[in-house]
Length: 259
Image (cartoon, rainbow, N blue to C red; front, side, top):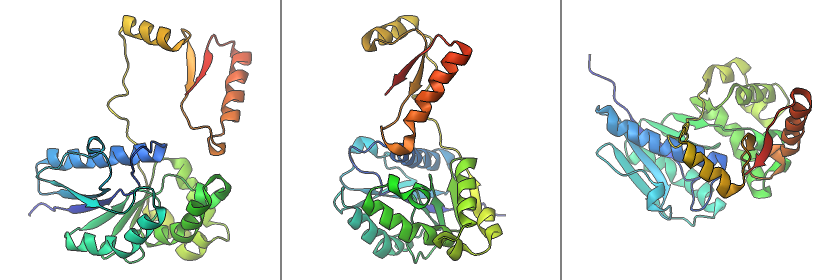
């Protein structure tokens, strides 16, 4: 029997210069990992990746025999441009490239895709707590995210918590509930695939290097680290309270460091 091969189109137009939120970091890592896998696998699988023309070269994976970078030219900060391109041009371009599947890496997918869609939903803040989103983003997610989830062949979420959020939201009287219909149908197509860990994150045992780093940043010998943007949905107040509660109960010698 001949091996089954696949040409995947990856919609990663959410990436733009100078944006480093958690979702952007996760999508950037996905782009590079999928391209590296296509080159390393040695089979006939291939990938076409839709990226903004303005994305710096260092942010893009190198093109190869199995990886095609498809540059798209709307303004980097134009959410409206991205929405219009996604709805009107992406399905045709994916079909023209001969894609077998379209992977939309962040929340929404075009209404009429000519091939099966895999959709990644990183969280459901836009549906569950829309006050945490910018107004324009909130309107777009509430209008398109439920339909995108309903129309996708597979929905990827990074954690069991996001899966449970989606299923719980489905049980309420919401646009998602009305679109998806049978709750078993939604659960059957959700796959929990955790975000990967970049190779840069690894244990460092070089004592002098660690001492120099502590000296440069004024770090204590033991500390707990919070790395997050100071925005309401990160719930930093609860994280700080939890840390000081742990200090009081367990007498931890640690300090709290926030980045």
